[in-house]
Structure formats: structure tokens, C-alpha cells
Length: 121
Image 1 (cartoon, rainbow, N blue to C red):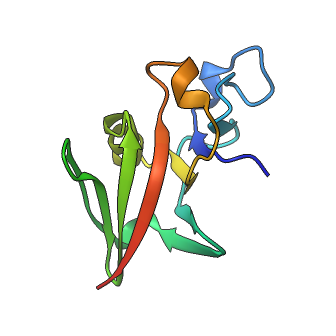
Image 2 (image 1 turned 30 degrees about the vertical axis):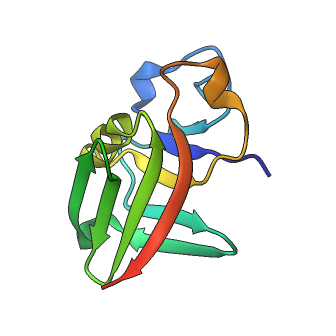
């Protein structure tokens, strides 16, 4: 299975590709305008978390992206993570996992997830 983040886009922004995106790190769901839940894939575990339990999303250039839910927190390191923060703000991030491909070397503006750390709150 490919490594990716899944983004939910509004139906009116359809593009030629089936997923609505030629970036291998993204897949899009065109049926809804926002996501109710976020899937976070970490190792062999998958966390399914409702957006209404999201208490904080913080981006820091040195530390990465911190996503905090009521009982669990994720620290994400990678490249172009501010774009992820914008997706979270609009409830458009459906799924995220570590990217093991070399795609980040090919596309300068691509979101690249290098590591996801789980912190129990």
C-alpha cells in the first residue's frame, strides 16, 4: 500500500484525475466538503479520531506539526507541514501516514511526512 495523506476536497474543485490529484501522497474524496474523522496510521496501529475531539493543531518550524486530541497527541516531522495545518483547520485531512517514498526529492512543494510520534495525554 502506498504512503499518503488523504484530503477531502469540495465537489466543485474536480480535476481530470480520478483522485483529483496527481501527487502520490494524496487521495481525495469528492463526495463531501469536510471530514468528520481523521485516521492516523502509525506503524501497525491506526487511530480513528473525531475532529470534535481535536483540541490543538500547532505548527513550529523546528519541532514540526503537533496535533492534540483530548486523550492522545501526535508530533509530525516532515516537509511543507504548514499545508497540513491548513487542511486540518478546514477539516479536510482524512488520513495521514509516514511517507517512505522518494517523492519529496521530485516535488519541492509536496507534503512529506518523515515521522509520526504518538504521545499519550
